[in-house]
Length: 411
Image 1 (cartoon, rainbow, N blue to C red):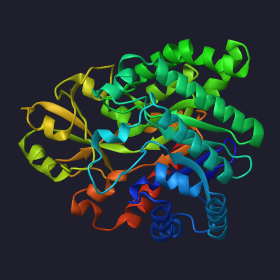
Image 2 (cartoon, rainbow, N blue to C red):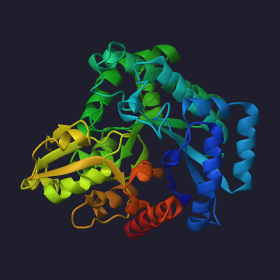
Image 3 (spheres, helix red, strand yellow):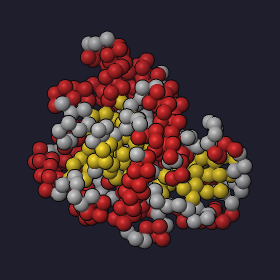
Image 4 (cartoon, helix red, strand yellow):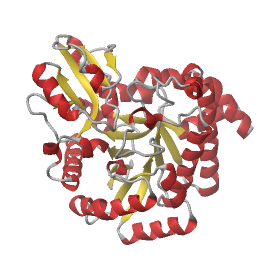
């Protein structure tokens, strides 16, 4: 939905919360859930979609008859599409996903081809004059160890060349159709891009060193022009949950990225699970163990003044929640990669990082070149039963209300 026209600001929720890997399942989820949420949130205004398309669904939707049918469906139901979650390539619900969600990574041709396919689809769905965004894997998973993935860990060169090729494809799409589409690498715990500092080092290091010359050769242009084009189409998906897990100050992170000329392709509004890891909290955390998703944990001493986000810190990492629970951490504060509904304020034992989206963050975002906002609580279906008792439509509608109230307070 359009929150503001000048400068533009749009809000949606990510459809990755709804199970379904085929296009038919995706469309049915829109019929069954999104239209209900639309009626509760914005029944009298065009309602923006944050699509999630697996490779299989994207192949189907890219067919001329299918995409024409979807455009007609959107027109009939006062919908439009402006962003795609292009992070999960394959299955994302109902079976173990864990580290598979990062594959294929940007060292592979499969990731490039999939992302360009999504861009071509989005280019056909975007309303006239509106830019589009696609979130994607932050290069790859730092913990990948198999032979076929070692290159993306040890040598970023191939990943940057694929990103440069993606920028070339998006630039060509822009020139031929007038549709401007950018992708956002999404920093995430335990990935090759994890912190704000790593993002800056990547954009000013490997991406400039390898990606710019490659794109300049492809376009037969000077390096300065190539870097401008590269940064127009390659940016960051700023996920508030992921950066809060790193104990970063969100407003400062956002400011630093923009100051370094890094495009904020999209801001994903989400909050992480937070606990003081004492016995009652550890008992409650058993309710959040699930076999589907990876729940990375970052820990700092609870007594540390750095828990107030006063300065950068180096938290102790655990690759997944079961690993963290094996350790004695009575005096530690844990932030856990488990997305909680934005409106959840805690219950005395379980808390969230929603408070990291403080007034400074909203003020910074309001005055920044950010135009795409996306609520992302894909873990809804694995939340404890009492946290999803009211149903998905009610929960997401409450999240919309929470976000719109914060934005109104910042105006």
